[in-house]
Image (cartoon, rainbow, N blue to C red):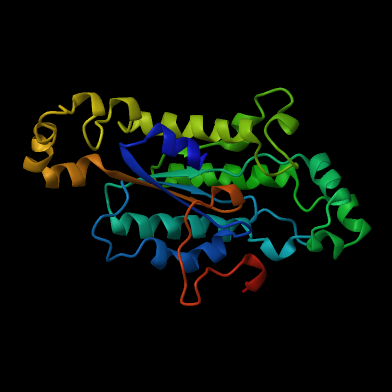
Length: 272
């Protein structure tokens, strides 16, 4: 989805993707001041928040360390939104629900995968899925409710994907993570919300002149307009979109750094 947004808004907006595989909303709160400092002078124009699949991990199962109670999940979403709105009251904030879960796909993945977390539970990992579609739906519903409460747009991915016959294999690669077609659904829905908010890519101006507009004999002419209104171009045309997501590794286009050069992996974090 991140790469598709970059293409949609190429030369019209800077799209910055922050994906932290394995993170839940509880751990995401520790990132807020780094990713969205209140001192930021040029905050993003739009931000998507995509959490819930890890929060919805079941207690007593393989990934119980990721579990966040649904009421805390809702409160954490509110805290994230509050921080963003303190950065900019006009910022467009979009909440995205967790996707559906194909439990058979998760059990099949556990049966043949060598990932140490599954092996830790042995045969139980293949018998009891660490997530269920029913529980993902509970968190998805609450995500939509928080969006309504805060008067924000939302993308109900959990419901949208299940409108398609065969969504289990079409949209999910292992019962949880998105396929190329699954990412296309997310991209389409996010772009729809952006378009409704007057952030339509095709209608936005380019940052600099198209090469056909540049006179080879007098190239400076094409840039005179930009030189005269440089501040306006930088502040209004070069928008910044920010995608803040939880568990899809291939969303990680650019990561923020800690003093030791990297953010902690989710294995380094402990439950509160």
